[in-house]
Image 1 (tube, rainbow, N blue to C red):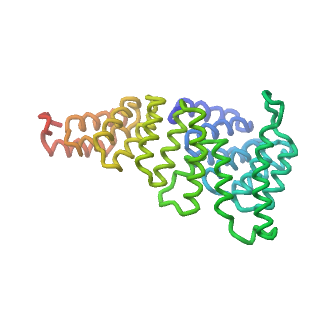
Image 2: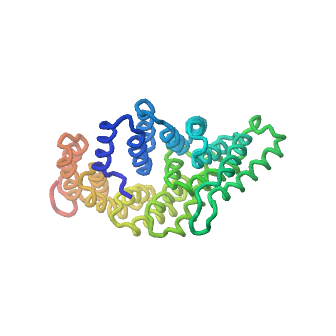
Image 3: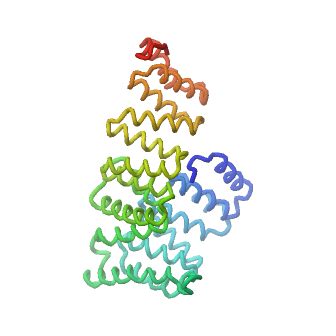
Length: 339
């Protein structure tokens, strides 16, 4: 998957402008943004679609999933409930509502909703002739029923137990690996409950990786989760697996740059940054980062070249101009050239 295909994004946004009343154009744009890990922009696209489209069930459903990925369980549940209300016989709408209700701690509602989904049967597997998707929900219903029994059927009066939301997260990530990236995109240290969710996401991703060892995005997500869990060596290992699966995966190269920098391996960070800047010459951030790395390594000629490439992308880039000026003042590097 390519995360920064701006031509694709422009084409999707053009469709939205041309046919704003069609819900499909909004969900297609949002789904593309969502798969690219740009959840906040996917959320904005769907909210815009709600204001313009005629039929909104699909938009509410996808917005619910995006909000769940962002960890906003209450809002996710509200939008999924609207989708299920508009189309109460749509299996995936009812199923996803039940899953998110469980993650939000609304055990009684989750059990009832999942029972409704099971009664619908779900899509039939042509290989077995059975509705496998509905059958897999039975274990979650059993977990919910046990929780209700232990709580005296009053689950809303006590906080959700960590094991149950983690189980729901694992199920959600198994269905949509991109949710793992949303869980891993945080600036602060993960709390105990958040760590349980991250570990659940990792279990789901690890299982998917054994099934699809050639899918680089799975390893990319595993790397992000490992980084958030503080497992830097494993994060580097998973990022390298993503690059092995797709050597042209520029985002994975840049992720590796960050991880190697955190590990104090500046040479390896520079190597991966060179690859990213070569793969994506239009990405100014890759050139700027390479310039900083080369300066740290004392390779002023290569640092200057990187800053000049940044100025080709944006001639007004102040950081690139300041970088070149600093190199001029520093004089020749150890390789004997001048900046």
